[in-house]
Length: 347
Ligand SMILES: [Zn+2]
Ligand SMILES: [Zn+2]
Image 1 (cartoon, rainbow, N blue to C red):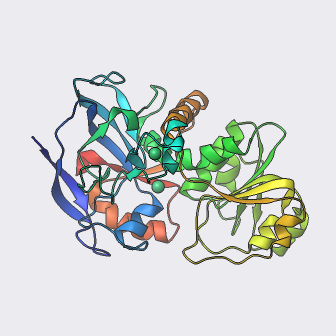
Image 2 (image 1 turned 45 degrees about the vertical axis):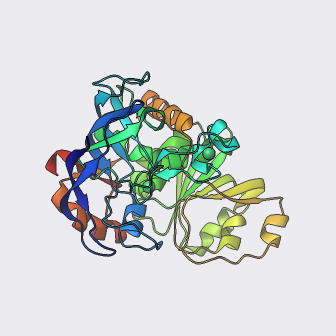
């Protein structure tokens, strides 16, 4: 028996989101039914609801930053009980057999993971995301939200948190390392908090100094405007890691020049158009131009535990579901500090 639940959906590409109902699958042997409490609004929700990446499945219920409470468990579930505080991020399944899945890198599943929304599950049914009252998810793709983290500020960690945590860990951000976070938005502000908590010396590189006070308060040691050409002279050869959270096209040569020998410029945001760089900007200094996408399930749990231990939640603006369309416009105008979170009780 499926369950009918209220949700906010884009009925077609570029159409405003509106209230509707969707069917959630029957709770299977290894499934948990989650009462969603909060859902973050990720920039990629807007891309997909507006079909910026093409091939969107409509109606679309976005939302892959989900925090809630377990309401029911299947007979085979061992990891969770009714009443547990849990989260769901960007994926709800993967093949579980390929080398990446076996290595805890489900996000890079060779056959592709199953997205939390705008995807087809193993039965060919469309997946619907977190802008809804409830969701049914396999226990292996559900994570525990530690008691120390409030559910509303934990929700954005499921995408923005893990997307920044995973590359910072992979490229060894920590004591003695100089990390630059490029962009001070939803991802960037979590990058600053996490890099600081990991013990790195953190610099924000932002277009302007408009958010400087926030950046320093969130844990940055330095804050520079990329619109000022002096920034590039002053910081040449400085960083071990530059984490780029921006999706606008960058002058990659200019940013690579800010790396030390063996430094890495890691992209978690991507411009829609292909880029062009002069390869001497990586050859000189044996530099790496890299990318990274979300994180595996076990690593997502590790990130949540780390954030709870260090008291790191997202900086959020809580909204009701009727404000989603306005919030989308404000995200596009960079007018949010730093993540909108939907109180799903208002759906
Ligand atoms: Zn996201
Ligand atoms: Zn796989």
